Length: 80
Image (tube, rainbow, N blue to C red; front, side, top):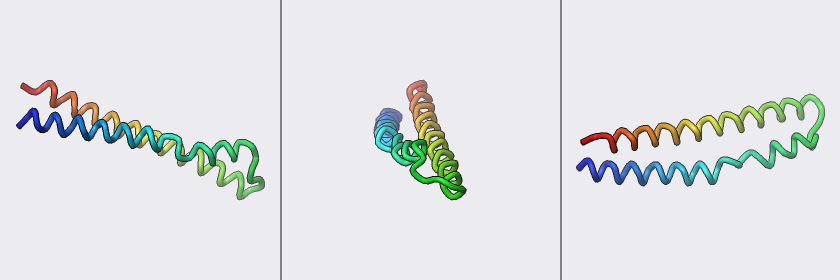
């Protein structure tokens, strides 16, 4: 049963990694556009700050998901 759990967790960790790789750059085009002053004025400044904050939050969530999955996988591999 432990081997089955390890295989399932490995598959989950691989899936999380693929999803992270696919979505890591999701907000990059918007951030780049805002860095080129695509939208200016107070509303543009607010949107710029928000889209960059959202990008950092996305990255943090993706890193945390990968970290958690890898920790769980490592704990299963250490089990007898």
